[in-house]
Length: 294
View 1: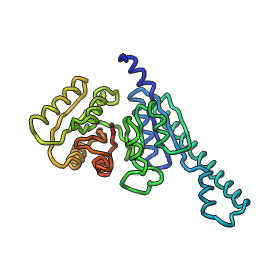
View 2 (view 1 turned 30 degrees about the horizontal axis):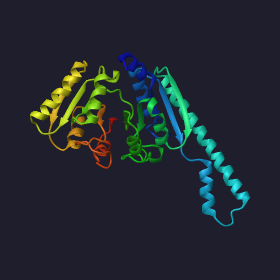
View 3 (view 1 turned 120 degrees about the vertical axis):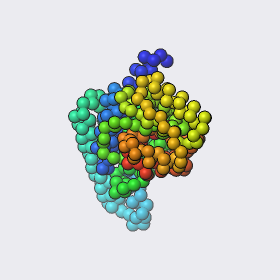
View 4 (view 1 turned 120 degrees about the horizontal axis):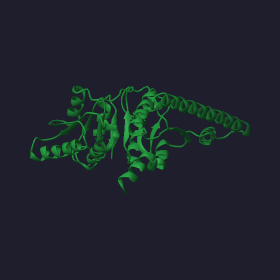
C-alpha cells in the first residue's frame, strides 16, 4: 500500500464516540470532536440499547410462573414495548444533542447511529471502520461512582485492536502528552502513532521510561526519542526509577500532563488489563484521559 493510499484509507475511517446518559457524556463528545478535527476524520456517535422488550417479558413470565394469564402477559408486553420506545427516544435525543454540540465546534462530517445489543459486539462489527474509539471510563449505570471503571470497559479493550481514548474528566484541550514507553510491542505501536498522527503535530511529548538506569535502558530511550525527533515532534525524554504506576502518576501530576498514551496487554512491565492490574491502577489513580493501544 502506498503512502497516499494508506492516508486515504485512514481518512475514510471515523472517530467513533460512544455516548450514553452519564455525566461524562459531554466530555466524551468534546474529546471526540477535538480528535476528529485534528486528524481530519469523520465523526460518528453511537448509542446502544441493550435491554429488549422480548427478553424482559420472558424474564417476567419466568418469575410469575403459575397463574400467568394471557391478559397479564399482554399487559407486561405493552409496558415493555412502551419502555423500549422511551429508551429509543431518549437515545435519539442524546445523539441529536451530541451532533449539535460537535457541529458547534466546527466538526463537519458527523453521523449518528443507534442500535440494540451489547456495545462490545457492536464495536467488534465496526472495528475495521474505526480510526479512534472514545469512551467514558464509566457508563450511565455506574455514574454515581467516583472511581473505578465501568463493567464494559475491560471487554471493549480486550475486544478491539484500535486506539481507545478513555475519558474521565471534563474536556481540557491537551497542551502536552506523556508517552509511557517500555519497549514492548504495544509501546512501539504507541510510539509509531505519536510519530505519525496529526493529533500530536504541535503537542509537546514527555517520553517516559521507568526502569534501571543502565546502558540498555538509555539506548532504548534514545532510539525512541530519535524516532519522535525525526518526525519533528517536540519531545523530552526522561528515565525514571521506582514503582511503575506510582512513578508515572507522580510525573503526570508534577508536569501537569493532560493526556497519557500507553500500550495495553503488554508482555513486559505493562501487563494484562485488570488481570495484571497496571492499566486498572493507572485508570484508578489518574484523573486525566488515557489513550490505550494494543
